[in-house]
Length: 353
Image 1: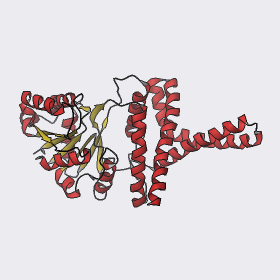
Image 2: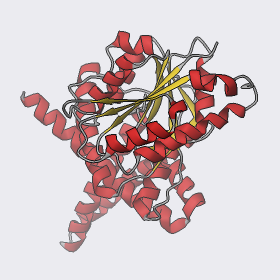
Image 3: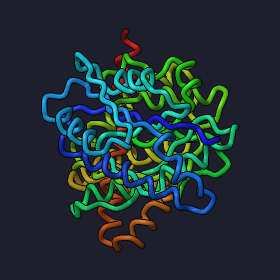
Image 4: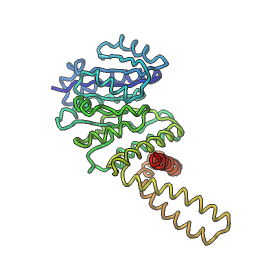
């Protein structure tokens, strides 16, 4: 018998995105028509529940969800309204405790589920050796501005084009991830000391991976519209800051979230930016001997960095053309510098404690 799935959605001021997500979950019932899912159509109402955990929203999120629940009773939609805003980690934990399903399927409130994803999820967990699973967000963007498209392509390339198939566990990305409920509760859920969406997913991934793998299934997909440069850069900075704190305790990189290759690529980007600036200053100061040495250093960092991002740049070129790829190269350097800055600040600040 297939496991029953509890879809847990933390929501905070999500009035613009929560209904499209709930509609996509409701429509995903049709994914049961895939080969091998003949009886799913008859059992689908008993196989799933949806729990929206409202994290003390200030907008109309609860009202909209209540109206949707009245119109779509077969969705088995429940609402848990928290008394105070405590962050997504607490909201997910609260939803998991309320859940009745064997499998907890976490979705962010600003995604749209692909129609076949739910059936793929059920299919994966029919294997008793699968304990946790993460999906992926597609590479498409309605927003045609450069940075949202860059971010979507960057993530897709990282998960699809650049991942090492020999590595067995992947980031338990709460944007679209599922886990057996008994395991989740046994691990104690997400670390609620993280009040914002920071590295609670990475921290849980490490705890899961001590005994089990987080399986990556690229057919479990959602759509997500990305923000502009500054909000994403801020997230990168603070995720790097808090990940570095975890790294100080673990003393090792991992095969998924921050690999040795990613570390080298980050350092080469910082070296390229820093020595590139010094080379420019030496040229302006007519220090020809120094500028010659610095130029060779810059070229070395450039070659190292190009090797690290070659697959992504080639992917950008195929998807959007040469000018997009060039712009993506320089944008990537800036983001890598931001990531390194967060790590350095963490090491300096935590050392002083």
